[in-house]
Length: 256
Length: 344
Image 1 (tube, rainbow over the protein chains, first blue to last red):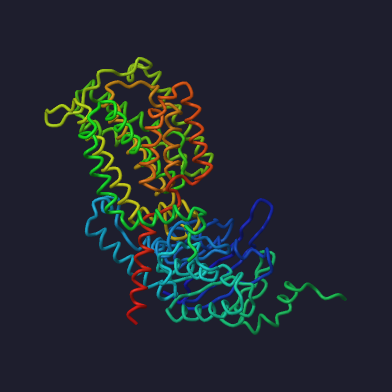
Image 2: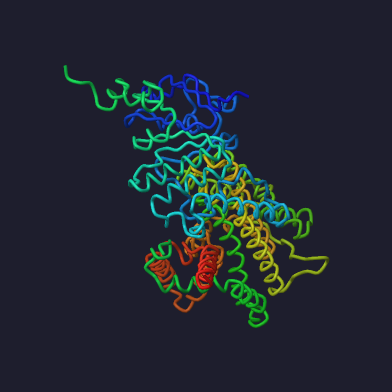
């Protein structure tokens, strides 16, 4: 297997007459931290939704671990080892922090209906194992003390972190974060940056959409820039910072 | 600590819930003892029949709660599934002389098959649209029961449904019928409880809270909706089979839209996603019409008023928003961390 984990070829997403994503291609290598930036409405989240199966691309192909995943359902893609967080937090709000993470464990445990009702040893072992692993993830993300609180009772920064914990529980190789630092203050963002770097240390490949340039420029190894659905630049942070097309997309053209 | 409870204005109620959660085992045992001794202490046939109603509607309310409370699928046609179960049991027992044990199993299976058949084309739609579909289903079932005369005897109904019996011993007295439905209720509670404490139950709850996120967590949302729907309608069918054998006579009027709404009211009033809530809601709404016999002429008015008052003061239902398991877990955890602090 090559060290390319995710390959996107010419993905286009149209909604009626609107082209939200226009012929975007990218190649993500194992263990990278890649940033996707662009002005509001550039099609970043739509692109994420294409990769994770929420939408089926109008054109183009997506290969994950050399397997064509175009048109697969989100839950199938998650089982293959890709997990995501959402731009607007989508936690299971009537469930505890621990249960939220245990939901992430779903496809890793296998007890069925009969096991659950008859409380077979398979069920018991699966429950114990799921709880143990969930607690490990919570320890790792610093949420263990909140395990029996409702997800909604967490402060904002921790809710974002719980989303990441929940995604990690699916045992992914690739993590996709949709604006993980949105709404965070300086301190929370710094914590998050440190945390994402730690994640890379555990062997995850990370793709993130972010508006916070401090975070993107500091932790991303490579950056893709989208504007009006098209890829306008690609490169290491220092290249992106000085790329005239990127500056134009963000600030507009100078007056002549 | 900020949690769901503190949002509730009713501090006292939260306190009571905490006490209940901490002593859930004792409360369960006391309730069970009460339920077992009830027909012995109160031997009046009238009271036992009311108690049977309470238990039978508890089964129905819990089965509806499984999809409405735990999964967020509102059904307005639950009586339809009860009817499928009742007719299955009635036809099998009157025409083929099948014993209650087998008719109840058959009724459960047939009703869940109907649940799956209804679910396959419709569970992809959501919320109020799905509610309308279930309403339609309930009505269609009633119309079929009314018009397929060769099978259901139509408006004449099926009479002479044999009594429940086990190994040749007929359960003829109300007290026997009472214990049968008590056992069925215990089985229902056990099944729903076990499910909700498993990965399947967590999948159900996650679908209720956020379908898109559940999907992203690797949960096949559609599959789990079908599973939930099948179990829920199966349990309703079981209650229907009991109803058929208990009454000895069924006709389409027993499974109308009113009946579906009654079951839904019990579930909502008792509290979404709460099993004890469903039992309390079902018992309350079963007893209320009887208790109001004294004010015969004004019965419907008082009944409606009471319902309205409860929904105004406790819109989430009596036990809605209180997950006793969560309260207990949190309490135990806080105690254990406190213990650690003291030792250090």
